[in-house]
Image 1 (cartoon, rainbow, N blue to C red):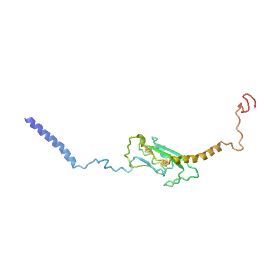
Image 2: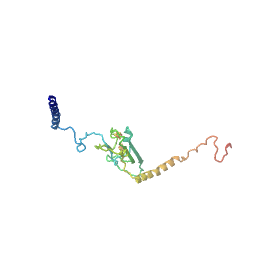
Image 3: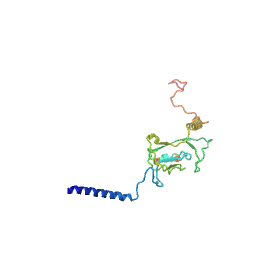
Image 4: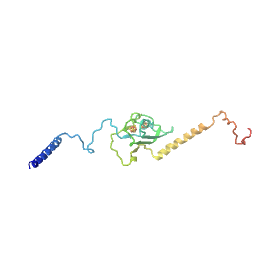
Amino acid sequence: MGRYFKNIWDGIVTVLIGMKVTWRHLFTPAVTIQYPTVKLKLPERARNRLYVNMDDCIGCDQCSMACPVDCITIETIKSTPDVDLGLTSVGTKKRLYVPRFDIDIAKCCYCGLCVPPCPTECIKMTDVFEFSEYERSNLIYNFATMTTAEIDEAKAKLAAPEKEQAEKKAAPKPGAPAAAKPAGQATPAQKPGEKA
Ligand code: SF4
Ligand code: SF4
């Protein structure tokens, strides 16, 4: 009988000890937050999702070359002299179209190495850190703003002067001696073995 009451007493004491810890924590300031309703303030230099302001991008490729995991893909098209692509917000003249500027953020390791080399400060880290996706392909961000028609037009404009330049290069220079015929090679009028 004595053991019976002792067990009841031990149970009560154990509950009271447990409740003591609970009561103490009820009056201690909380260290947790109600995420995602409440969010912590990020440090000033926090590295999160990247953003590129294409209005200021000159297509110099510096960011892509600095990336250790090759997750930035840039394609450019030269502009022709009659086209004025304008200036960036820091006054740099734009000379290249940028039809493709992709960042595969799934590969990105948030090292931030792509940011400092940018001469126009148009690639930067944002404070966005919640961007999970169900499809991996959705993590390839396309920043380029050119339409297919604009890309085709820029390519076509460049093709004409490039072709002209290639033809000029290929044309024989005036006064230059005709290219020597390799020894033993028959002209189209000669039969093989016949002397010139
Ligand atoms: S943060 Fe680092 S890994 Fe991500 S794109 Fe920039 S250089 Fe590449
Ligand atoms: S370094 Fe800057 S300007 Fe150059 S391609 Fe990258 S984002 Fe554009």
